[in-house]
Image (cartoon, rainbow, N blue to C red):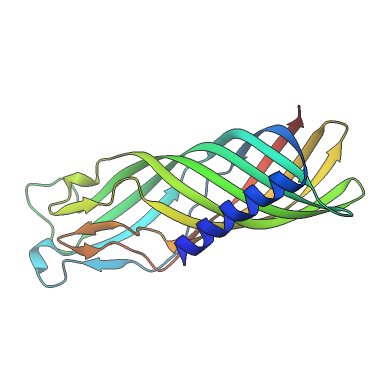
Length: 217
């Protein structure tokens, strides 16, 4: 499914660029801090002395920046192609079932910082000064820093690729576009992270609002 969507995005991009008028925009955006709620994941349940409950406590505010290309189609329709960079910071909690007398607390917080490249592709329609867009995006991790390695047996996939979707609305004023977008992932939080080969994948999928300012060049 992921490979199919990536191929589809590349085919649509190359075809529309070849057949249509292409203009560039610069874009900056911010996504506010969020505190997702989902059920704890029990890890190491077969070894009670190392058992803990795992969850994500917070997703920090994020800033995105990059460029977008706008491709005019017939009528009021258009295609947006983007290349964005963002840094995603998350805080996870591990609550150990059995307290260790050598530890100050059974609750441990861990940080994950992901440097991401995003390739969004949207189809949109202009409705006067307002436009509505919807599409898919490729999310490529290019570097990750975390202290989750302090957990015994922790491992993670490097430079992972995920797929997501987005839908939004914008207001166009002169050369500027003010937009709000909701972004979702097809992968669950914690995908690609393991402790003793046991997945740390939680039940929820990451979602966030993104507020953007876009200027035509």
